[in-house]
Image (cartoon, rainbow, N blue to C red; front, side, top):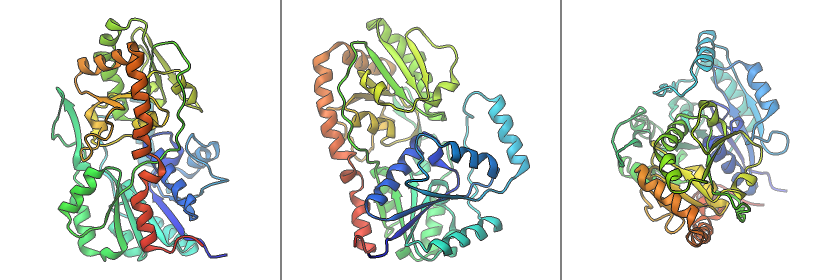
Amino acid sequence: MAKKNVVVFWQRIPYDVFAGGDGLYLDRLKAFFLDQNWEVYTLTSRLDRPRLLMRIKYTLGGNRIIIKDTYQVSSCYVVKPLTLVKQIFRYLLINKPVLGFCKNDHKIGQAEKKWLLLHLNKLSPNLVVKCFDRAGSEEFDVLFQGAKLHLIGFLKEDQFILRQGNSSGEKIKENILPELRSTVGNIDRKNISFGFSSKTDKLQIQRLLPGCEALYIGIGFTPTFIANTSTLANVLFVGNKTRPNYSAVKFLLEEIWPVILSTVPEARLRVVGRVCHYFVKVPLGVDLIGEIDDLRSEYAKSKVVVAPLVIGSAGVKTKIAEGLAYGRAVVCTSLGVDQAQPDQFDGAAFVADSPETFAHHVSNLLIDDSLRAQMEVQSERVFLQNFAPTSAYQEIEDWLKTHFKVGP
């Protein structure tokens, strides 16, 4: 039997432990590599969390992590007492997301470098995928001379805050382009490729950095189309405990939901996920469900899935792809649409940035069974075209066949 190719995902924080968009995105990408008959390893090297706490996290597991049967996980942690104390106080005293993002430190410490070399020498990977905040580390590109895929996820300069229905150019994160220019300029490009979850970002990076190899890597779901089993006018929002989700639910509760209730008094909003931790008092008709193990039952009894995002990167979100995977009609803001594919959700989702228009679309879908049925049919079509694994991973599958020997 031929030896399998080995891929190592290197990440600074254990995305797999947390049931959120980043963890789900990586989970599905790792599953794709497994389907391609690769061995998959995850190396997590967050330096500001103690080993014991994270080992407990891994042991207890989360909605998106499978250790024994699927992924082999190894972790390196060096305790920084001051950072740990700051995090504990932030966790205990702040019950809402901070208004800014921390600047990433891409330098590799000696302890982390020693740990990385130990595991890389042991695993001898054919490919290392540098995940998100680890993608900007030039030191690693010198440390490891093999093939590398920098999984950027999105261009940080392309994050927006929606204001009065328009995308402003306000930046909420530092610009990553200098890091990319430096990396691409100083290292042999033949060993480095870039992966983006947005076709817009892929096209932009190819324009800004001519000659770099960029891939669109979407998120692939197994279709789970299910019929609506409830006669209730349920609206569903699913989200993790993040600033974009907090802002989305706040916008939904304060500006959209009252308009919906004025048209459909019997409507109920079900908020699922850790984002519920941010809210205590909610308006009439709102249920804070919190974390659950299986989302199928929630999707089965919901008529509409909403994604009223007002802050974040412009591009398709996992919550939208997941809603389509279950065959639901979707209403989202323009931040949920890949700008390079403005008609991507044609017939399966309404896109609206103003609260009145957003509420109008949701209300119509709750009232008009025929309209909703038509959109549910289109949801299946749009899902298969964009979010089935064969579609979402086509570019990286072709790239692997070009650069690596795939199969027996």
